[in-house]
Length: 341
Image (cartoon, rainbow, N blue to C red; front, side, top):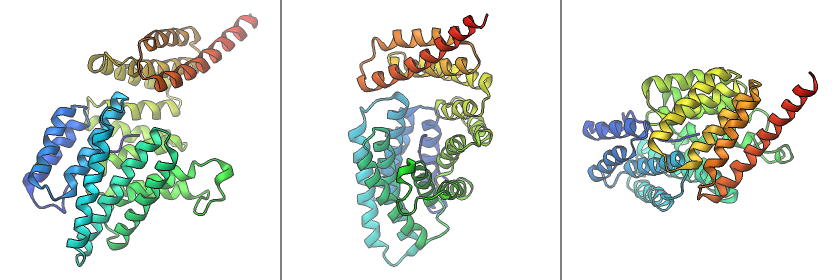
């Protein structure tokens, strides 16, 4: 799941600033990272005391690392989240008598913490992720208390609720963890997707992923298709669509989407073998689901060959384990097929 802010800046009357952000955001979602960064840096140059540009850069560096499966911009990422908070804390003092702008200050602090929590979670730094997640909820809740119409804040709150609802059953005794938490979380994300000023696409993407995980894959796929209609060459939203289709059992459609991701990755990231191998893993999963066990094994063999020159050892290790599981399933099914003849 990608979380990058999109923009319709009613709260920021500078039309020149709005144009910069909108253009940068559209480049970001089609993975034209250099162009997106040029626009977001111009936002910072135009409004250096505004947290907005720094938060956009935090989101962009996070998206880059997610797309390339690297940690090369981690230092930049944390720096931009810190700079976002620093500017927002100045706003807390400057606008202490202005509830609307004060709400935005809390939102920026909470959004920066949300980015960190999601990043730390992907890296399995769970204590850090929990710490940042709790801080994000605290700040975003303050934003909503000050201005209940600041719908962008509901995205982070909703994502946190959905994440907490997925805790193992033996942790369900924790305060606030109950069977209805996922439902409430989805409702919050949906609210941000429908009414948010600066989080529309992030919320739509998050909603599609959450629905796919929650037994409503058809709706998640519908949302992802609409995102791709607006961003036809987006790899980011194709990952969302492919997963939703897979979860919904629409394997032939999912296969075509993962093929499109494969072609895009081969063109843009030929020197990143893991990025290609993970797509082949999903093709193998789909072929297994469609009882095409021999072709599934073929994808697994190609993926393993690619991983022989992979330098990201932790990613390589985890993917090899996943490939071994699918191979085991394939061979068991093939053996059962032979024995039944």
